[in-house]
Length: 497
Image 1 (cartoon, rainbow, N blue to C red):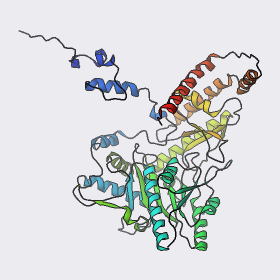
Image 2: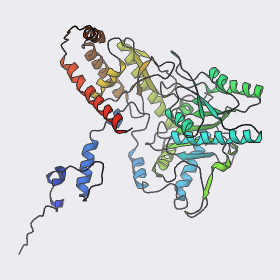
Image 3: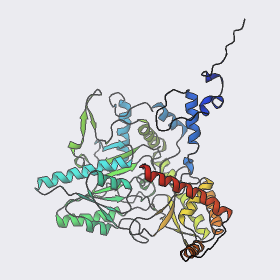
Image 4: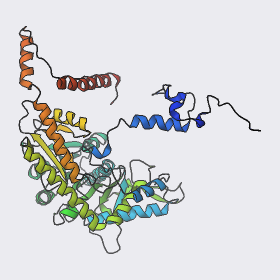
């Protein structure tokens, strides 16, 4: 005899999630719900909402890696539950980090002896690495000034106005004056001559960028070093250099090995690099490397033993995952010098393809350089009718995320679009992007110019009634603009940042 059972409302395992009540019930967004829901429903609800995110592969604003080999994905998932800080419990993971530090230090030409270990640490990104390097410079400068009986309460750091925001965070969080070398038309990186002029006795270091986020250009670290050596000899100071190689640190050694920017220069005391950019690892890994032990004050290193053994630690955070460290080691041994060179050469070639395609349209000026981080920064030759922000906005209709932004002072009158060429950006995609940009330009050209809008505005001021009929495309473009304004106004009132 077969016994039957009536399915209760709570027994959702026998039918699909979309047939259950959980897709009809609104969950609280900012409070934890009172009741549990089935795992299938939780997955589906979150997965459905995430579909509204942009496609990471088409996010051309980001330098961060968006593709890795399936074998590395497996390693990442198998170690996702390991807390890196438990060094005694996961000694092999610790060993892999130490190997990465030494590999990268040798890549940056650190002056190490035959059996000498490199000095460095894995971080969650270049921002943390820069904070750590900055703290080391500040503490060394303070100790020196104390020994000389001089005031040590007004440290400063010299950078270009093109630095990433993490430098400004360091200055504000750790009470260091930030001296910025202003940019100028057609020169969008730090001028080493002006930087050295700004150096004084309270300068803890000069920060140079190997690969500006604005246009990919390398700053002239060699000239900065030579000028600073001369000034130090004349004044008796010992002002050092930090190189922010977040983007270029995994590019220059393979494409421009003859370029002197690293520890081959005597005043370069520390370097940061992002493993999750051109180190070709998913987001969450950076590296800080010091020239020698003398450049990292011992008092900044903490020693703990409650996890099983004495463990030195010099990080801003404590617990973090092991996956990205393991993924970095995978890439270093998997690709080797040959593989990284091939990847970077491909990126550069695809960058040149995109640059050539944009130039052929006749609409753009190219702001970026051929040598540097593989990206294309470009601006409209004529933005009297429509601007770069409108081009960026319309490109989203084709799936592309291409940022538009203004340059820092004193070049803030220049607006550019930027496309970052990553490993997974192929020549086919480059050609398709050019095609879509041409479509966007054609659509914008079909719209009334901003001059017409200005006439209408003047008419309103004079009391005249001027009616300009809007095209379907204009009306369509107004909708997301109004929506974004509404969202931004809400953010201003509710304190969300």
